[in-house]
Length: 443
Image (cartoon, rainbow, N blue to C red):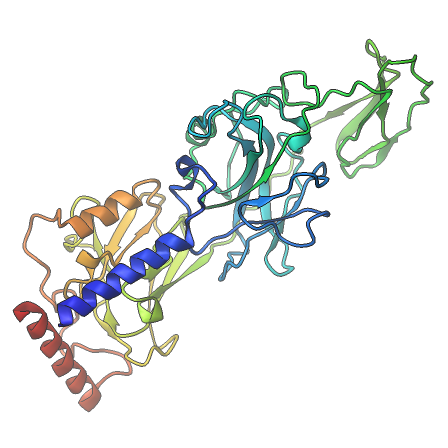
């Protein structure tokens, strides 16, 4: 009976976690790293709130870059940085062929603004936003426009593999690998039918009317370039209007000679700042062990920098944090870290905690040594890169070749239960756990 109940509980837990990250319209190639604890929202001026995954926005004005938020995420790391990009995987003429894509937007250095879960970036986009109106080719019907959210290293990140003048032929997987990034942690998409307007093949819009307006991002500065007087274009011609651009810092503004078909232009040059930004302060990553979520660490893995702290808060009933290895997930690593058993049957937050200070950026692997919790997928990792699915699969498939971990092997010497659980309560808890183990082994 107990084994059947445990099996059903585990099955429902895994199913619920799958449903939570099931973005049916986003190609599976982009969702492999989606974190159930993360989310991404996009808000256009014309959508009256966040876009729901899979919404059909055909006919709406989507020409302006949306605002971004972290969805319903909890425990936001205020020192984290993110990258947001937008791609169209339907330019290949088949929904099953998702590479390459057209790149509609890419911007780095998004950070929490402190206003709810909103995020923003004060760094100019690497690839400026263009909406569905810039689409050329591919499916005749609606296209999927996919926004993806990536964790960005906080220090020393240099963006590679992006050409703002060539949006087509973009391969998000190659770009991610080239930049040393882990898979996207969240995403959202909508459908929109391209208007069928002309395009020059680079993803940039081409206008056949009398005026094209080009708006340059505003950068704060001490020098202001004055707008250039323009004259009406010839009938059927194209006129480019350059808006006033304000720049600050070590930069200079100069008026460039007009190019063919243009009435004027502004050239901006900027020197690299000489000051070096101070290193980011250490971050504490909070992880809940067990509790109402079941036999799971929440979240199951974190990306942490050297010097960061991972703080484990143990809830019901009795769990551990015990270090192991990728290949042998359910066996204690000799000389590794271990919390011992932390008994908290009433799930009182903060009653039983354990912390690990991250020494370096290498992957670290952990499991719960209680009975068969590890074999049911109760594992955790620090900086797993793209290996966490393999680590969890190894645990649940029983790839460990050594002897099983004895129930008290990672616990300190008597008493087994430390902290607030002691005396008579600890003895009763020990008897209950012993009975559960006997039932499990005999059924």
